[in-house]
Image 1 (cartoon, helix red, strand yellow):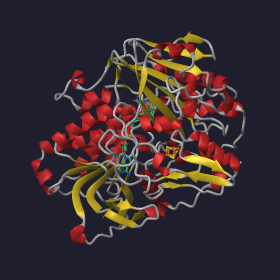
Image 2: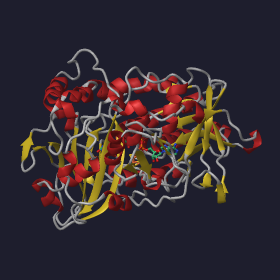
Image 3: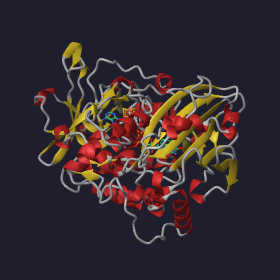
Image 4: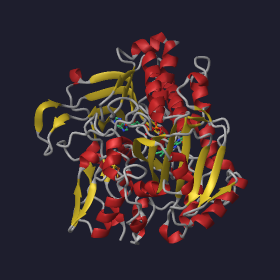
Length: 558
Ligand SMILES: Cc1cc2nc3c(=O)[nH]c(=O)nc-3n(C[C@H](O)[C@H](O)[C@H](O)COP(=O)(O)OP(=O)(O)OC[C@H]3O[C@@H](n4cnc5c(N)ncnc54)[C@H](O)[C@@H]3O)c2cc1C
Ligand code: SF4
């Protein structure tokens, strides 16, 4: 049985259409950016810089030249990453304006270790070249996002938090903007006392910077035929931040346990443990969503990881202060869309799939692609240009292809796919790919969709540790630690089939780090208000749509 056999009815065409508000009631902005993550905020900052020296273009863009929509309570609320940041793209973005040491970082990576774990032992192995972090810095992406949002506002952008873009506005073959979601609806969709209808926001250029599992990005790829030949695949990352008694002086990555190496399980991933200054440590587990065992739970694997002597020692005497989860697009170069523009539209960051999987890096690609999108939009807004004519924004694709982003991703293009063949064979192939800078193997490996993996069932769950409330936790206390206070009487935003076989219901129950699903009799029950919008359900047989703006986690340290 495959999750793909039970896909819910979901038609992207229901999420795209012409503006419906009367023309004089539409909100007009110059450039509309969806998503206040590193990609969207870099785009806003770069546009601000370019408009600073082109007052006549700014003038023509009207009262609000640049607007950024963010569904979280504030910028940063939905941002979660490792995060070791390669500062390359930030240096370019702030060239001549800010030094890297003025940004909110916890400091440079000074030492690093990679371990292969067995249940009791940790064998130090040489750091693979793709995982080296010399010159990189440690951050909380949520904190960096808040800081970038301040810079974007200072450069003239208007940021609209608690605002979800739910429909792509398109007419006459071009993107016109987005419609924002209604607020104040009850569980059955009825209007409550505080009801506020959504609005049409129209713009000359719309930039989708929605990150992983972007709702409108998927709709746009479908509508404009932009998807590439290979499907996208994802991993789920679950992380915690700890206040610790002793500082950690290095970045740690682990492979092996608690994942199983045999090819039949398809368990690809590992853990990261990063220092955040003198008194905090962040640690997380990242696992490919092409796994097959219905009992696999990334939330519980992270709990298990903390019981390993290597990790337990680091956390001893400490206290968990934050928790969160998010997916990562892992298909890499082979899964990139054919084009990242359409008339009036640009797509950047994780929404486009710009992630280097062996390096676990996407932030600098998000920032670089956002900056390049800004430059392309700015060029198309000059007098005499029309961004909505076909090909007017193609310079963005050209610039991205010329950039380090493309070169980096091309070199590791088959790496993720190789690990579908098990840890040992995948590791050997990855080594050969690194040594030849991607020339071996010469062709492109096929990518299999996460939903197409046949499910199996083992007794894996029996060895997950029982939550003790000190070192190990259950999911509900994790959801609490994410700051999630979603109103529990809003409409359900998760699209799944309820009449699914017990194996699939069980798989969702284990997969969801926020305890949204419960296998029940001949189907599954759903508690949508627990959802932290990680996106895993979209990879494994359902569809996450944006809930009411302002819902979901309120991350501050992730
Ligand atoms: C566990 C984990 C560890 C990682 N570790 C690292 C690391 O160490 N280093 C590194 O470089 N990269 C790392 N990455 C990857 C990195 O975090 C991403 O590549 C990066 O965040 C992508 O930036 P983005 O701006 O494209 O998307 P995001 O950071 O996801 O931001 C998108 C924003 O858009 C908003 N949004 C989405 N849809 C809508 C909508 N319809 N309406 C309104 N708002 C919307 C979201 O709420 C969010 O704020 C990691 C990722 C994970 C999950
Ligand atoms: S319901 Fe889906 S999107 Fe929400 S937290 Fe659970 S798996 Fe993630």
